[in-house]
Length: 88
Image 1 (cartoon, one colour):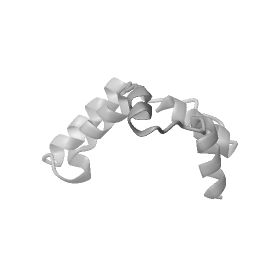
Image 2 (cartoon, one colour):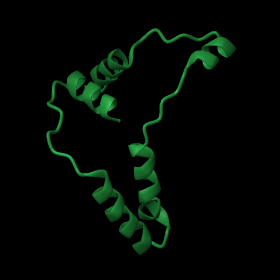
Image 3 (cartoon, rainbow, N blue to C red):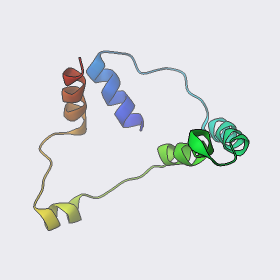
Image 4 (cartoon, helix red, strand yellow):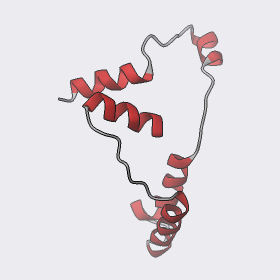
C-alpha cells in the first residue's frame, strides 16, 4: 500500500502524508467499530478490510506469465501516472 500511495502522490505532484496512524491503534478502533455494527454493513467489515490493507502480500507473476503468455509492459509507477493523468 505504501508503494501505491507514494506512486499516486508522485503522479499527482502531491507530497506523501507525513503523519500516520499506528496499525495497532487503527485495528483496535476498527475492531470496536465492527463490534458496534454487529458485524454488519461497512463498519462490520472494517477490521477485516483494514487487516487486508495492512497485509504485506507479494505475488510472483511468473506462473501467470507462463500460463497466459502475458508480460506487463508498464511499471506500477508508470501505470499510476497514466491513470492520474486520465483522471484530470
